[in-house]
Image (cartoon, rainbow, N blue to C red; front, top):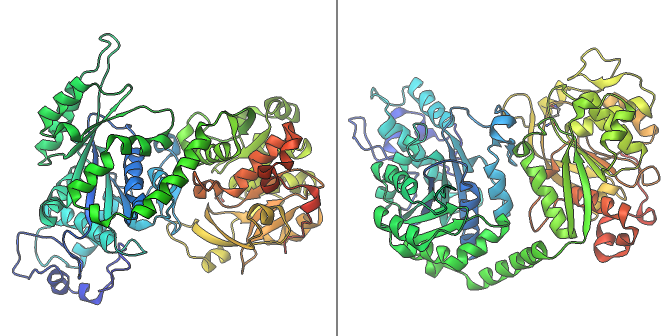
Length: 618
Ligand code: GLN
């Protein structure tokens, strides 16, 4: 059976009959109480597992903790793969409200996931896939579909062994192949906290996994929280003890305890936790608040957390010291930049819909942070409420102190008119501008209305009866694209970039790049010529179909006006900030500091009129 494709679909002929399905796991129709699906060729104990489970409360930064730990092991030259297990019944995160859950993160293969996958991609500098994310909804769907096909041969389908078996299967499939090959260590992050009803079957599956894989194969890490009530002025360990006990009641003995706390966990508290949870004191670590998440990997290493993991899992001999040296040098260069004093300062406005909740734009926030570190600038981010902008005067007032403007992605009509007015102001006043997805579409509409003379131009998403549907849903194109889930165009797509354009300059001369998409509407092809004639440049487009993917204005009209139908924020990484964001921040710096353009960084990121000979899009 092929194991390169562990999708939710049954994919092998041997699985198509119930007997075949069972025999794959060494079971017969007479039945066995055990149900431990194991992919063919799987070697027990070869791949190790580190399982991070939160106790006491959620919101402790489990994703940041697990990804930093995974990075340390990854840096040593081992192949690591994270997997996030969500307790909810949704199949993916696509339908979740960003107000409640934070942004929807889109993977290369088009899966819409929790924002934690973004943390893993950024910290590990790796692209993940649907192999790295499971929800209860996916697991149950897989089981119920099989049950309807008669796949369980008259057995009653139960939480144990069937649901837990499915979870283990998914983990073992990932162990054998994450899309690039065999994995040394899988980092499992269980959503929620120990004791939650929703994640109970994951915790049970992991307990079974540890038992089946054998001693020294699965390291359980309890991430707990040390309270420090202001009325007492000292740390108390009781909540942590009780939280860890919940895990032990589920049959899991943690091997490592990581104590989240505001201040460094005291020796007294860590000793108590060690004693009450049967964990040697040397495996209890303080994970107190730091000034930046990027110093966490180094702090973990200094505390010896990576060493304890390697020893427990018996992995010391797989370490590649040269690889680790290289990775550490690269990361130190980054953290040095992070710590360097910054004299520059710019103000960046983001005209979004969920301005009251930063997590709704987590990746944009991160992309800006990556650029600010690389360019040595403090970026004061202002979240602008566009529902309040109803006139040009209003736009100019709201944008008065803004050095650069981002109009991010979104759905629905709230604040749309304000966004268009804000873009008009940025275009006319030569304020560096970046339009993302919906922001790109609004920039097309603004240009159509105010420059190309297409009065009343709009998107059919927002005004179905518009006289000039410059943005429209084009079903025939959807038939040509790989579409997963709903009718949205999701995941990574190729973009052909016009030579000598701003985009081409930012992407270091590349004429073909890949970015991630999540949209339903796009530029209506019959307006392309008219828009282009009026001066708009479509400098990035689909290699085969007339789907416009990057727009820009010539440098003669504007120092930095660019938009992407995709989400550039999803591919920004700490050490490799996303080019379009870099260009935006660099352009904003050079408004204040024209000399910046002639520095080494400036020459790389600020396009001067001398190197700009932008051609037209098509
Ligand atoms: N609502 C727009 C569309 O579906 C933009 C989507 C987005 O910004 N992600 O095309």
